[in-house]
Image (tube, rainbow, N blue to C red; front, side):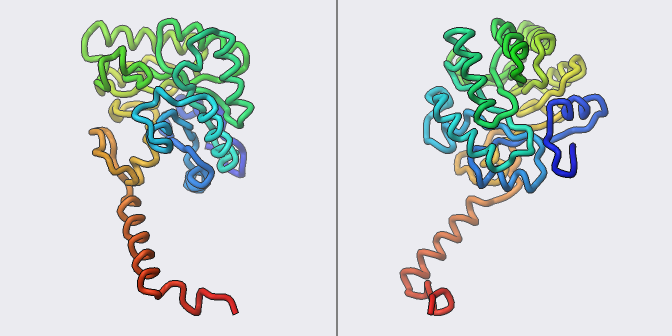
Amino acid sequence: MPANGRAVSIHDLAECKRHGRRFAVVTAYDYTTARILDAAAIPVLLVGDSLGMLMLGYPSTLPVSMEEMLHHARAVARGAPTRLLVGDMPFDAYHASDAEAVHNAAAFLKAGMNAVKVEGGGRIVALVRLLVERGIPVMGHLGLTPQFVNALGGMRVQGRSGEDRRRILDDALALQDAGAFSLVLEGVPRDLAAEVTAALRIPTIGIGAGPDCDAQVLVVHDLLGLTQDPMPKFVRSYGSLGDQAKEALTAFATDVAAGSFPDDAHSYH
């Protein structure tokens, strides 16, 4: 990835694919977290609509609005201006009409994002082509697509039947031909993800798709151990910040109750 302060671009990801270099993608929803991810040299930050559950307390991604997404996108853009920033198009932001989809995608770029992500294949392929023709880089998303949770019958692994496998592979090739610069594969069997990755010129980004993708993405709260809910099978926590935060806050409350904070050293004279 670029050094010396040069911004990460979609061309850098294409180079990674060509040379077999894997890279990490992490979600980001606020300025402070974006700065930490920037300092850790994470090349791609996704402002995911998962912020609905993690930051806003919604039961799913479906209630998230464009206004809420743009609010968080602007914060992330201020925290990591040289990383490749991708804004997640929320549910219903690209369904009503092509004109509305272009308007909302452009709003993400105006908010500091470098690209947008859309879920699905089929008719979404034509939309991807339209956005790319208008200068808006697009990341695709196939497999378990959370915005389609009601149509899928729940958060279930996709691509286990022969028909589903063919559909996902066909959609992946169609999204590539439409100009998508990368593709998220979520919740699919490892061998299918490997097949799609081998068939594409663009990088695949796996989440619950096994180790054979060109990149991996995780939700920042999950990988840092901030989430209190049970973790899906595909998540590995690389920290226990939730427990550490609880201990720190309990110690603070105890010191305040005991009168030991603030002490003289933490007072002005």
